[in-house]
Length: 300
Image (cartoon, rainbow, N blue to C red; front, side, top):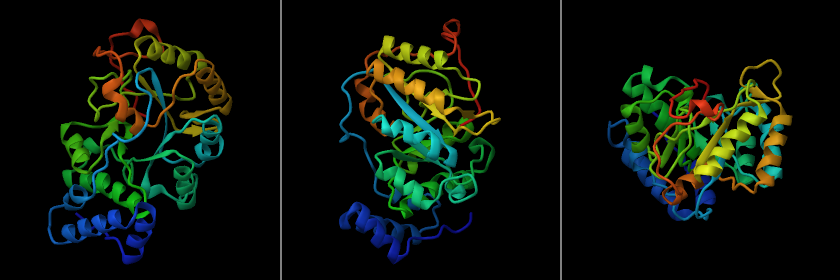
């Protein structure tokens, strides 16, 4: 395992400004402890834990969360601003190794996203399939992405598995890294009984239509459950995971018309235990006839 770069004094000071001197002192203590042990999980397991319990969210379902994976610049320019202008926060899952790469957001833009009230989540460093790498590599990718965001003063609380690849070993690392929950790519709604490290979602791609999304939302309304919609690119013509901004405008109009609460993933986890209903089933939002079946979309 390659040695993880530690926080410099200047970075500690920047974290202090973002999170307060007491918090920064705890972070510095964690790094010093991690330096003294060969345990690869030492850093992540000693970083300050974050809980979503203090976040003010609606007291019952239905709720919807809007996720944007990978940190694409097109989403930052043409998608997320539309949701924010409507008063809807999003959760942006960042591949930290791609920051400032061509076609991806940079350090200034990720800070601007957070300042606008959006949640910043971790999505590994290089976007590997975590079930196909060694345990050491998985620890590097999961803990390293959280560390990289901490360097920017962002204490990220949720994680998204690249392309949905996870298993009990990977989930254990995510828990040890201090995340309060993680999102999969398995299709379905989330109820009060959902495992917070196996959150289901609905992947929105170039082939997805607005009526299909409206159907998914209608199911969440009917069951008073939590629907997570996952996007990637916006207005990148010809890309299979890009959506037109017109679809986003239509979605916003539908959410506003029916007054559906839109929350970040961390907020959704905070209220998970208060979501009405405990039915354990998978629902494909595309067709009503697929209720009770399981589907996995590898595009997260």
